Amino acid sequence: MKETLKILVVDDDEVDRMAVSLVLKNAGVCMELSEASDHNHALSALENTNFDCVFLDSSLPNQDSFTLIHKLHSLKIRVPLVILAAQEEKQIAVELLQAGATDYLIKSQLNSDILAHTLRNAIRLYRAEIKADLAYQQLKESSEKLIQKNQELEKQRQQIQLQNLKLLEASQLKSQFLATISHELRTPMNAIIGFSQILLRPKFGQLSHQQGDMVERILNNGKHLLMLLNEVLDFSKLEAGKLEIKPEIFDLSKIVNNTVAEIRSLAEAKNLSLLVEINLENTLVFNDPVRIRQILINLLSNAVKFTEYGGIRVEVAEISQNQLAITIQDTGIGISHQDFKHIFEAFQQVDQGISRKYPGTGLGLAIINSLLQMMGGKVFLESQLGVGSVFKIELPRQITTSPHNGDNYSSLNLGSDDGFYYSHQNPPYLPFEFNKVSLGYPHLRL
Ligand code: ADP
Image 1 (cartoon, rainbow, N blue to C red):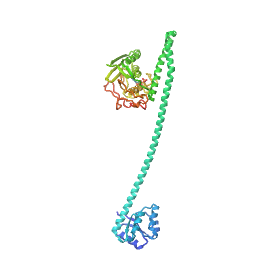
Image 2 (cartoon, rainbow, N blue to C red):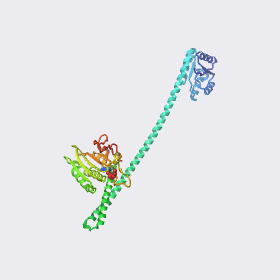
Image 3 (cartoon, rainbow, N blue to C red):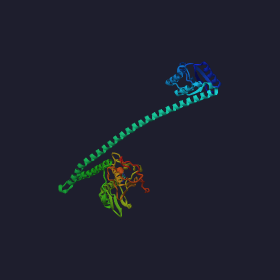
Image 4 (cartoon, rainbow, N blue to C red):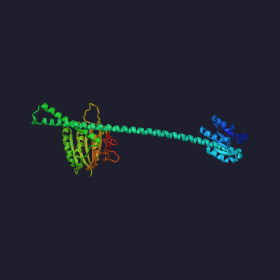
């Protein structure tokens, strides 16, 4: 269906108005035509009706054609405006275009084709402008919304950053607290151990069997407590990046044999065999003997602690000229695959219950893992419930530590490029990937 256009013709000359109306009719324009003889009538008509197009005489008295255009502009009334000008008024028509009119026609050249064509173009242009304005408006709104969203995001980011700082501060306070407490407790603990040892010496007087038994218990419990305190202290030092590796050249076979000898009485007390096999052509290594001993003591005491029958086997071998492996294998209770990840996290144990059978802080493996990372080593675990466990550590024969070792772990070479540690051995022991296991040390990458 043809669209009916609302058209307003503004001209003080009635004949001219009739002429325009006639040409429009001849052009076959389907329309509702309104007429106005001056700018006041035109304005009130335009305020009340949405016209599709206005034909405006260029020379209304008192420059009213200009006044009308300006008024429409100030009232924000938008409508396509076609100026009708006499031949000699071409300059005025151009000025009216500059003031905001859409197009102009010369009255003497008016015919139905030109008029219909100009009308169509003016309406098309006007509608395109409206669409463009609408799109621009929507774009502006979206961009404002985006800016607002960005501001909100930025605010959230700042809040998260603030919370992170608070968390970091809390974590540092916790580490400091742990370090202070364990350090302070170590002094009286050493006194308890020292005085119990003195009491047990015969030259300080003979104790009754019962008294001797009690002092011995005090001594053993004191030693155990001291070991736990040392673990907590090491852990807090690691967390604070204050634990240092002090490398020197030493004989690895001696350290392994001495550590095994220290543990032997514990194994014998449980009727467990304890075998050592050292297959090294060159037994010298460059590492921190205290920390290597600490790692071995931890793994060996775990092996004894979690084994009820059978035994423990320690093997030291050369993987390559600069790469060594120490394997500690037990026939103990084993670890289920789903617990592999957790037990390397700080304070995590397979049995976390209050009435748990096996004592400990749950820090040993976390400390071992961190120490090995500082040494450029790796730890592998293979285990099967009820069958046993194999903890295998791989180490460079000669470690390289950063000059600020202990201050900044991220600068240390932490082993494999992709962070994947895996085992090549087949069942019965299941391979374990340490990939992205977190020990709760924010500055350490596994
Ligand atoms: P802790 O021995 O003080 O509990 P660790 O970090 O040394 O802490 O060990 C964490 C947990 O890993 C242990 O509580 C135990 O559940 C498990 N685990 C470690 N070594 C063995 C092992 N050889 N056999 C069985 N379970 C083990």
